[in-house]
Amino acid sequence: MAAIADMTLEDLKDLIVTVIEEQRASHFFGQLDMDDAELGLMDTRDNRSLEEVFASIEQNRWTPPADAPSPAEMIREDRDSR
Image (cartoon, rainbow, N blue to C red; front, top):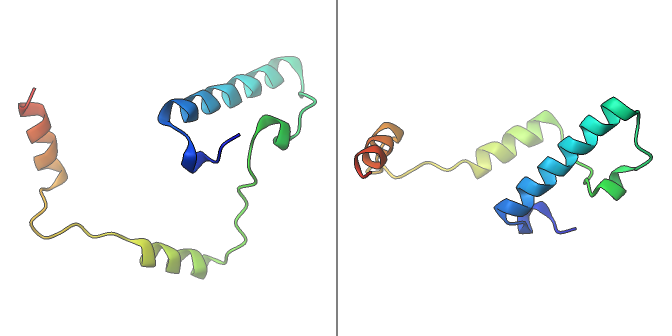
């Protein structure tokens, strides 16, 4: 299975639907005899400290340019263009 970053939106939706359906099935029919690798799930554990996570957030934060429209302005523009 492709990495999530390489998936199209439709592939990601299909994966989500599949996982939800398998979870519902396991709820009604008991646990499935499948491990995470067979389900195509990745290990999402993150061993970073909170300080490292906060530093990463700060480092990767994006601030729009001063002349960028506000979200409300973008919504109005989208609404009015229809």
